[in-house]
Image (tube, rainbow, N blue to C red):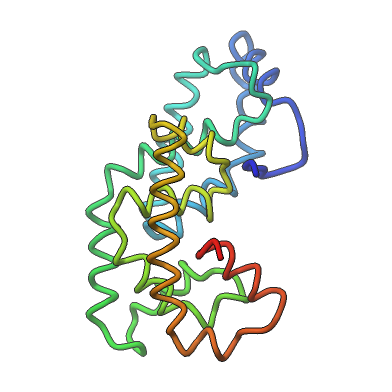
Length: 208
C-alpha cells in the first residue's frame, strides 16, 4: 500500500526540473494538496490544517534539492513534512480528543467526530472511533493514522517517523489491538455489521 493522491506521474522529474524552473513545483502542489489537507484536517481541524499544509509546502519547496529522485511519487515525502508540521500542534490535537471525551454526544463537539469518521460507512462509528483513538498513546496513534488515513506502507511510515520498520509493526499491532478491544464491544458495530463496506472499514482500523 502506498499513498496515491492523483493520477500516476513522475514527481521526481518535476521536482528535479523545478530546481531550474521553480514554477514547476506548482504541479506537485496541485497534485497532492487535496490528500495532504484531508489528512491534516481530520487531525487538527480546518484553520490549523490550512496553515500546516501551507507551511509544509514552503518547507518542501525549500528542501526540494534534497529529494531522492529514486522515488517517483512525492506523496510520502510530502506527508512526512506535513506530519512534522503537525507535531507542533500535538497539544491541540490531544486537547480535542480529551474535550470530546468530556462532552455529551449531541454537543458541538460532534463536528470533530464527523471529521474523524469522514466516510459515510463510518458515520455510525464516529463516537466510538474517536473515543478509541483518544485512548491511544501519541506514538501509536501517529503510526495508525499514517497507515489508515495517510495510506502509507510500513516502510514509508518508518521513513516518515525515522524509526525501524519493526517498530512501526509493533506500534501498529498495539494500536490495532486497542482499537479492536474498544470497538468490538460497541453497539455501533452490531448495528452496522455484515456489509462489505463495514468489513473493509473494520479491517482498516482493527487489522482483524
